[in-house]
Image (tube, rainbow, N blue to C red; front, top):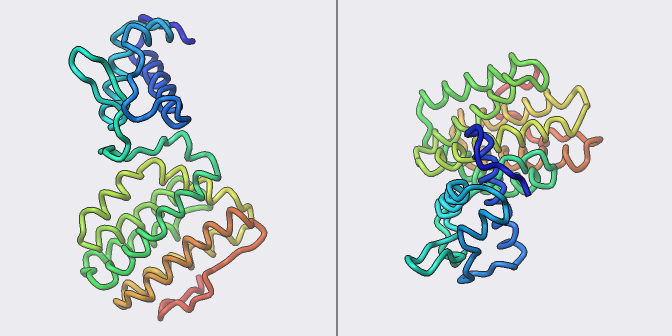
Length: 252
């Protein structure tokens, strides 16, 4: 195991993460089950050849994630996962295409619902924010960081237009994971028409929200996420959702 009893804060933090990942893995594998007592602080310090404060940092993180609980005078125990109070996705996994596909599955029902609500509830200010994000996507170069940021802004603007804070919080939570997953999804296809196809998909969503058509907005969002999944699993096949643009031209 890694040895580090002193050194920069970043090194200490990375070793604490190593301990967290180890315990997470053992729980996932079933080696540590709900109610099991974990190794003591001293045992973990010896196993990872680190100081006890590093172990305490790891334990604090595990507690914050709702994975373990401590009983005074007894030790550290695996929490009943049905009582878990946090939800966490490791951003390091966002580079794995299989994880990105799973994230798309998670996003689809939430964002389809968000598009439906946004179309029904959006204000003129919400609409202006959506247009601004879409315009930024149009102005960006292929696969540029500005384009990824504009893409995220577009989806976050839809969440804001729901006027339900939970949708905003959900996308804000995804944060960096969403950014990395967009990069992976876009890079899966090298066809030069991909940017135009994805812009058309976003434009259909925007048009439906602009004309306050909830079902059309929901369908357009579903087609967009289905298209992203298809472009990852079948990069030779481009899909533009097969849906008319509800009054907004798709000719650029």
